[in-house]
Image (cartoon, rainbow, N blue to C red; front, side, top):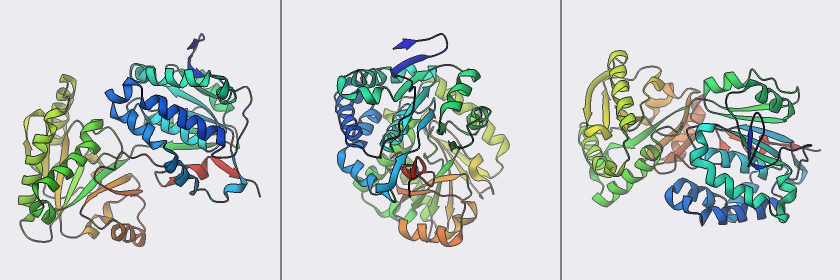
Amino acid sequence: MRTTKNFTILAGSIPEKSMPQRPFSPLTLQFCQDFAHQLQHHPIASEDPAWATFSFWLRPRKLESYKKLLSFPENRLGRGLTFHIAPANMPTIFLYSLFISLLAGNSNIVRLSPRLLPKVQPVCEILADLLDTSTYRSIKKQNAVLTYGHDRKITDWLSKKCNNRIIWGGDKTILEIRKSPLPPMSIDIPFADRYSFAILDSEYVTDCSEDELKNAVHHFYLDTYEVDQNACSSPRLLLWLEKKDNSFASAQQRWWQTLTIEIQKYDLADIKVSRKYAEAWKFAMHIPEISDFSYASNRLYVYTLDSLPQDFTQLSGSFGQFFQYPIRKVEDIIPYVTSKVQTITTLNIDIQALRTQLIQAGVTGGDRIVPFGQAMDMDIIWDGRNLLDTLTRIIR
């Protein structure tokens, strides 16, 4: 760790001159495997499964599948230096962002919020130690992870140096960072505020076995409670596909009863309870579509709607707050799949058929459709972009 007057370098060093590489170079792939191995065997991977998930994400077979997503792979080269603004509420995202750009053949500077340091310091130490070895001296010279507060001058300086700028953290962060101009040929890759919802088959929930139900509820828990519903991909609204009358009533009762048992392990700090209570009052005052409210201790609030507001992205709670509404057919969701909608998680829904319906309808949102348990799975294709293509250039 090296501290200057304005920022602290946690790993690597700021590149003096960016040296683009071919995507998936042998040295980069070796570096990925060595880092994944060390992270996997560090105590932090046992303390927080999200870090173990990242190390598994770097497995060779997965990276080989990503390599196949590149068009014209033999003519590709990294674009240069990528400046990453990492989010403060999702600790692992900085690693995904860094390694995707590294695999694409770029140099990197990653800015971490000081608020994030207590959660990521051990990971940065693993990264720093590996970069300090003689094997990876060339990678160290081209990559840095650093931290500083809200300092416009530093952001201006780093923005002027970069060929790509990746901004995580939502609409307000994007607007603020964009006050720092980029060079004319550089590109912004923003990840704005998004909204996600779920579609469940009511009949399936009513008729499935206890083991099947517990498995579905557990995967739903991973998509939501594990990240305090902070992720853009975490569902806030559950749409119950009700092909037969009254299947919604029995299905949702069985679902929430099973979830009530699953969430007993959820760490509900006092600050979370306070925020949930404040949000509940806000919803009661500003969302007239709410027809019923129920709760199972402070770990679960459920708001039943008598209709869907045209902009249902306002239905956004945290720490275990969910809105629900029955629908008669999957096509009913099409008018609501706006550009704000990112992920649609599903239970016993034909994903390919739904994807085809959305494409044929020409919707502006709905970039991902996945089964329960995969909402948090980071991918090279994110928010409708192939990040490998975006972060590289083709030499023809």
